Length: 255
Image (cartoon, helix red, strand yellow):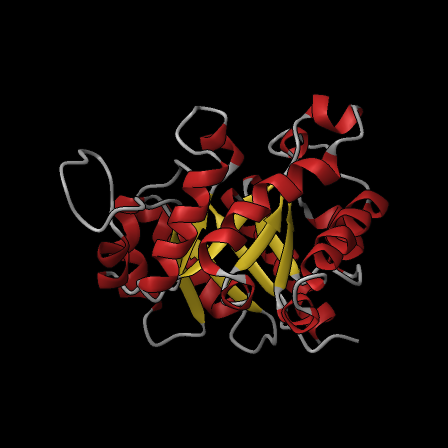
């Protein structure tokens, strides 16, 4: 058994308002007070102040869904790493497929943002994963290697362990069709092996998450896989009762 902690991250995407956020976070605080698993909430940027107010001095961390690779400048609409730190963020999601698909992010800029996050004292959650066409062509290994290598080039293999890697097949995000446990384990085992070629200890220590239509009915199977250390949860984090069921499963796995 691995000593890596179980981590569940709620990616609430562009959803929520002040009352909904308060209900979600306060309910999560109460429900998971005695849990062994670790949790984090990533709300939209305007609500980071609310997360800080509600979650500070608690067992739940919070983070952002994206950030600029630059510290300051004429980048209208962007948010810098230091701004996230000012709101107490621990985590920041880097390279989510919904941003890669819209042309905002690519492999190289994800490497730059990963590096900028580490320099700011943030823990980057790097999202990697293949499209449906790439999956059907059997190119998943090639794709995840291509997405991971620029990060290693920017920060070095040793610093990679300071971040988190989330495997999220694009074809499973928001579709209700999670990847099979066999596929998830095969890919994350490949990712861990790819890292082990450069540094076996980093490979053993780094936290690997699965994301993509994680729900209470499949969470136990997915979270029990040898190379899965938790989950990045999107749609299911919008329904507090469903997310709480997932946290209970994560806690059982962590125990």
